[in-house]
Image (cartoon, rainbow, N blue to C red; front, side, top):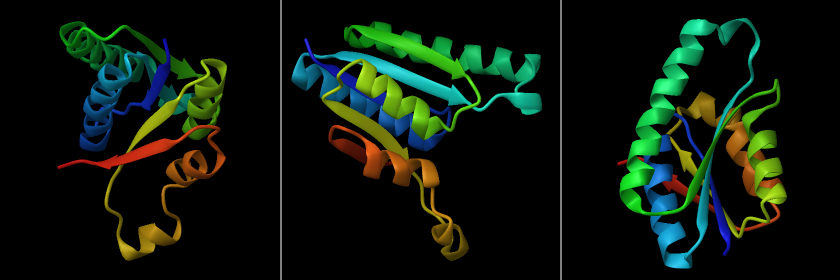
Length: 133
């Protein structure tokens, strides 16, 4: 059984990535690994941790309904989300990584999603980038 890895954030682009990753896992008869990565530090306090866990409970409910075998990983290790996503994908010998993208302003494009760019450039396997509706 292969593995599809998806980067999840509780935003429209994260939801789009999750739903597309479920579709891809079904098509490939693969396990789905959901990665929710936080840098940690002072911004990741008890309230943030509680919110993150509630968000992941909703993800688990969606995945339970999908029938796809899955694993949900919440990482708070001080790494960039791209590093976490790539390392989990490599460790699981993923055949696909799914990430969500959002529109950026012209200035935002100059410093465009360094995490998305890093995943696209450094991943060992194909990367599917999806946009939210």
